Amino acid sequence: MGRSTFYTHFATVDDLAVFAITETFAATSAADVAEGTTHTQDRRAITREGVGRVVDALEATRDDLDHAVRIGSRAAVTERLVAEFASFTAGTVAAEFTEFTSAERDLVTEFVSAATVQAVLR
Image (cartoon, rainbow, N blue to C red; front, side, top):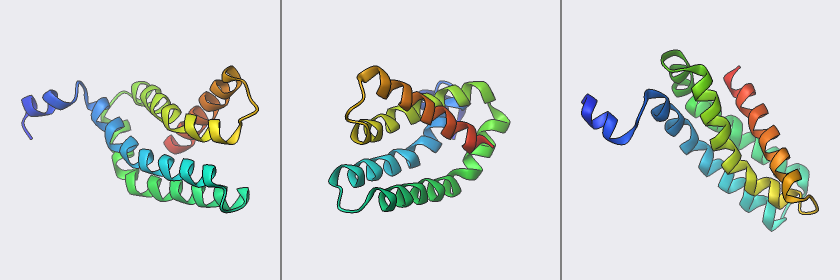
């Protein structure tokens, strides 16, 4: 791909890395929210399946993630991933913690997202 084509679609290499990684997690998150809101299984089974999907997604994107951190700004990639994960996690948190206030759900979402990204980057 030529340089001009790349910059037509992505402002930075970090943007490309985050896009490549988060596309997989968007599908994983959507499946998790769907499972969590239908309640066809108990919470442990839903959580176990959700974690399994996340681990599978991590394996699928491991090379992209490693490359992104090597060539880009780790801080920028981390910040963008936390924001992207928060957008995915918000639906799950809203479905799981209906009794929480909006501010409490936001806090849980941010905490879970930041912790997930830190674990992924390790």
